[in-house]
Image 1 (cartoon, one colour):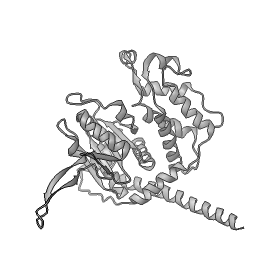
Image 2: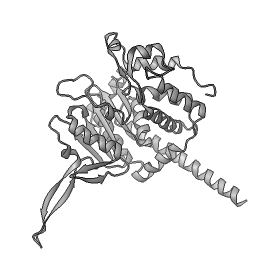
Image 3: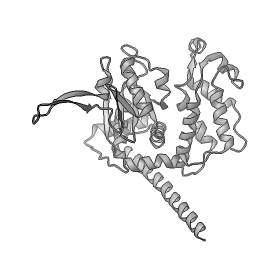
Image 4: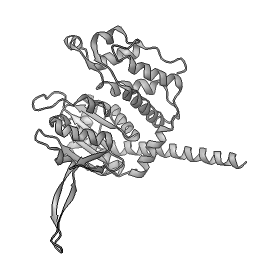
Length: 342
């Protein structure tokens, strides 16, 4: 009887945590919707990245509210927000921090003191990340992967949770540095912000040109967000769905045995195993946000494109025929049969 009572308590506790997860997500969206109009898919992907503990690259034209969206979400999470404006002359020490010499006025002795840079935040907005040179991008890569930074041989841990939400402009090439593939691979999603519909643009004009000042309040905190990240990992996924994810990622590689002809023709390099890991983790978070405690085929296909679009490299055949990664992935999902148990 004691064992049964313990199982009942565990089940009740789990149910409470799931309900709290859903309530927090709904609260975040309610707060963000006071400021941001439309962009449902991008908002969903950013929240999934936060609940998974991943980073997100946001690609969009100027004036699509990329910076405002990130800042507003950080406010609703109750986390420390830092913004770094990336420029061609930005140095690694400008983001990580540096050691300075301080003198003790009582003893006259001098010592090195580390002054933290803007990377020491919970939510770091890397604005126009592709405008900084490779040396500085390498410092960002260490922070994103290791959750730490190295200054003068000393390793400093970054606060937890730690998210990098980076933005880039897809049309400007002057003064930009393409992100290395190793750094792109660290981003869970490459979320694309498109133009709004006419009705949504009318709402934006009304919201931003009137005497309105919406107040955004925090609905959660760092400790609870870390608990949510552990909760997401406990969501089960069927073996057939997990195999489908692996087969999908493997099919993006032109040398794979199950790669279709159009992948072999247009793709030079496909996704790594990290892509499969991110698809599964993202699908688990999406399932919880839809009030389900299991992953479905729709969860996987909804997230496959934003997870993979920056991980496959197309060749000159694709460029000459104006075929982009999204089109390849759409055809690939349609080509692969869904798992039987989905």
